[in-house]
Amino acid sequence: KAGVTQTPRYLIKTRGQQVTLSCSPISGHRSVSWYQQTPGQGLQFLFEYFSETQRNKGNFPGRFSGRQFSNSRSEMNVSTLELGDSALYLCASSSGQGRTGELFFGEGSRLTVL
Amino acid sequence: GQQLNQSPQSMFIQEGEDVSMNCTSSSIFNTWLWYKQDPGEGPVLLIALYKAGELTSNGRLTAQFGITRKDSFLNISASIPSDVGIYFCAGQLWGNNDMRFGAGTRLTVKP
Image 1: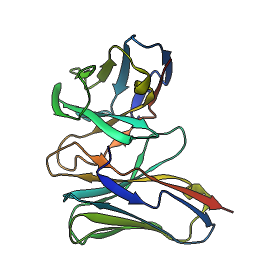
Image 2 (image 1 turned 90 degrees about the vertical axis):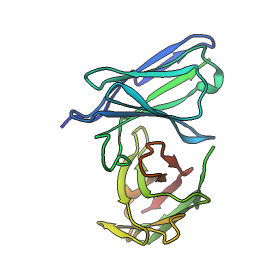
Image 3 (image 1 turned 180 degrees about the vertical axis):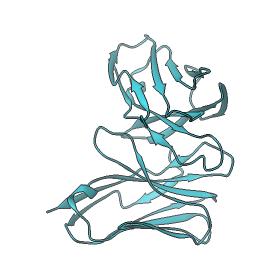
Image 4 (image 1 turned 135 degrees about the vertical axis):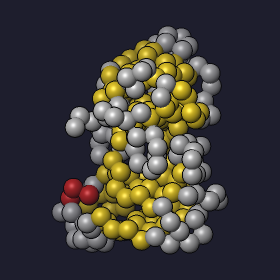
């Protein structure tokens, strides 16, 4: 079955702009989690959505937001971009029940903020 | 920042050698997982551990869930070039999908 699809794969923005990233989970998966990966901080949890509701949230400022649609596709938005937001943003899907740690990651969206 | 201490940060080994890496935490976790990330890809799940003391194998990979629930190790036997990549440990509290990841171990295998 098709894996997790993230779009766009690469994007360049300037400070102050906003960005929206998209994630299509594996068919049948109802949970989508978002992670930020940087060389300095590693993989950090942003938030998790299950059945269109945010179920968990990491320690990121309110500029980072997300949502999930009825078809389980998810988007995350970063407003008022800062240089430090440059990172690989990874989306991961899971069934959302039972063994929820077993995540299937997409290839990521690499964001560069200039 | 990271709550898991993963070591070593990097390893350079010869093909055929065995590899060992570990992860420790000041927190107790209910689940320990090991992922591998290849360049340009997202992490892929290798092994998931659910019980303290559990020892699980996946081919040449073996991982254990520490008795204290605060640590885990991953062993790779007879390494091959395709083992190259970054290995991450992750800890999860039961019912909480906020997983914590280690900083990763970058493995290089010389043919």
